[in-house]
Amino acid sequence: MQPSPQVLRPAVPPSTELQTVVELTDARLSGVGADELAGVVITGIEQRSNAVQPGDLFAGLAGAHAHGARFAADAVERGAVAVLTDAAGAESIGALSVPVLVHENPRSVLGELSASIYGNPSQRLQVLGITGTSGKTTTSYLVEAGLAAAGLRTALIGTIETRIGGQRVPSALTTPEAPQLHAMFALMVEQGVQAVVMEVSSHALALGRVDGVRFAVGAFTNLSQDHLDFHADFEDYYAAKRKLFVPDAVSADASASSFGSVAAQTCVICVDDAWGRRLAREVGGRAPVVRVSTGSGPAGDGAEPDWTAVAASTLDGGEQQFTAVGPGGRSDDARPVAESAEVVEVGVRLRLPGRYNIANGLLAIAVCAAAGVDARVAGRALAEVDVPGRMQRVDCGQDFLAVVDYAHKPAAVESVIATLREYLKGSSGRLAVVVGAGGDRDPGKRPLMGATAARGAELVIITDDNPRSEDPATIRAAIGAGAFGMAETERGEVTEIGDRAAAITAAVDWARSGDVVLVAGKGHETGQEIAGVKYPFDDREVLAEALCRRSAPDDKDLTVS
Figure 1 (cartoon, one colour):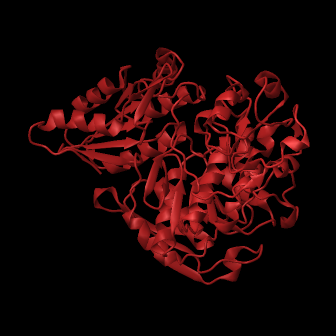
Figure 2: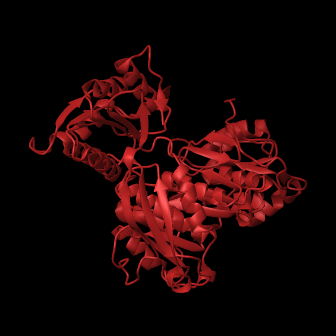
Figure 3: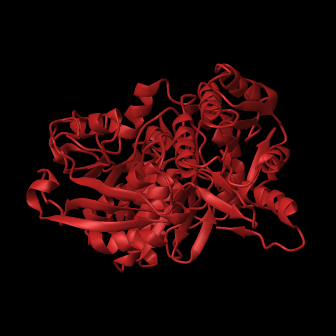
């Protein structure tokens, strides 16, 4: 057996008779009769055989590389009391000592079934879901801080970690699979959590990982190119995000009562880009829509933004401040919130630089307000928030700025570079960017990332990110095609160093007083996956070591802020 991964489950889970599971899923029994169901009780559900616990229903799902049913025997040995799979899985299993439930598409019922097995815990929580291409993690951290400042007991689920009270667990997926997600919700209820902030990825929405979740608030940040290895095109990518606000099963003008549990009860949408404006239109009247904009003018559908940011300015050290102007309360019907509440002004200070973080901060204020939190209380809390691997400074006493950021798509790289160029404005400082791209992911974004970096930096070092199963040189060549494709008059120096640690060291050695070094792509990650093996690697640690070796290795203290 493989070692069991760390699991987050309630200490006292509900019990569900297997017969009830059969009725809920409309599955058929393979090779057993009703008498064999008597007395069989389900206390959990799991699709990972090495995480199965006694009393579980094991879900053997078809995967991209293997069918999960092949691990059914291992699951039963660990204590699974029944198996749910499809016809192909049932055929491959052979004889088992437990009942096998066969469903045409087990994944389609996995979310609702998981919710039921754990007692529909999201209905006893205020679940706030945040989706979009960029900004999900930062906005989630900001929202959680605002909720906690209001005295709520909170939890967080996202790209970096899952956090329930003081317990932190590194995240394998931005949004967990449905069995783990509902188990965590049940644990949260058991521990007295009142509100949970979670990132909701397009994969999660497309694959049904959040089926069965009751979202009190759904928030949208923005949309730009990413994940087009998974989604057929931009429209398909947008359609997945849209599910959090308008499920495909109904039209945008249908009544709210006909919607499933995934569609958020209140929608908070940043309308700074065309996708957000379109989404606000398509939600229509099915739920209250709160429009958020850092710009000026109408929100694109004839409606004024409900929340806007004014008087933005940058402070010493890269911090920034702005005033959030919006309604003082929330609407209880489908009218625009601005029509039913007084206007308030909230002074906000952020430790996070960049115009895009003003959008994230404004969205966070609006989400907190939609959740019933005083916007002023939330606004004060944002000043203390740092986000791991997001514009994170690394300092070893050097006389130039060194930053690690998770930017791994063209728009994110462009935004981070624009922020750092603003930091350099009026000085003779130069910018170096260390950039790579992940393997087995959207290849179309690679030359765009290269071109974006080359256009904005004096030095671009193309290196490896997480090559995964791909040839690293092929990935670097695609990035280089975009970088070298720029006219020499439009780009800085471009070089290639495959070894990521060596690339980071080269950028540090290149820098002089007043410059900026940006290490982009991996952010908070603590490993580098090459040919199926994950090696320890943390950009922040590697950058700090290079800085301290250069500065004065025997005298300087390493600081990652």
